[in-house]
Image 1 (cartoon, rainbow, N blue to C red):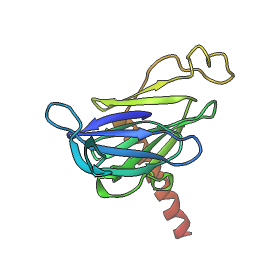
Image 2: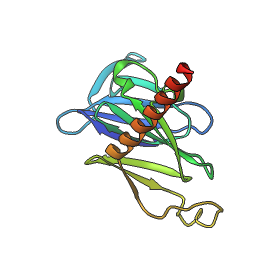
Image 3: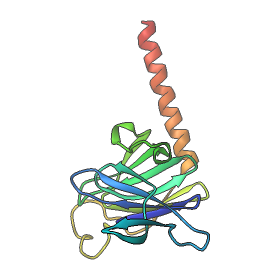
Length: 174
């Protein structure tokens, strides 16, 4: 696995792929914290193992994910290219796939964004760009955990959407 998160008694595990879609799998958890096992037959033998209850494709280069109520943030990055933070509806629980063209919001961030975590309306972002192997490469190296207030982000997005609607209405009235 490349990254994971937890929500509502389920473990979500994501698999990174650099040039094609990755995979996100959802596992049911037991009260003690173990993945719920299923018994299945293989070559005439009973096998007990944790099996994913749902699987969905995710965009290529996904490095991290974090749930925010009924939304899902994913971080994407590859090498020295700019990273992206992408916001989706919580589709995996609706039997849908996460595809870039279905994203609610996407914006660029400095290179090598990896893990993300949400706590108290803040999204915390961890970058690999300041690691010893990469810090001398050209471009911005982020050597701190960056935070962003999600309510403020929502406000800015709503203002931008309203501005687009107003421009569209102005064009229609001309």
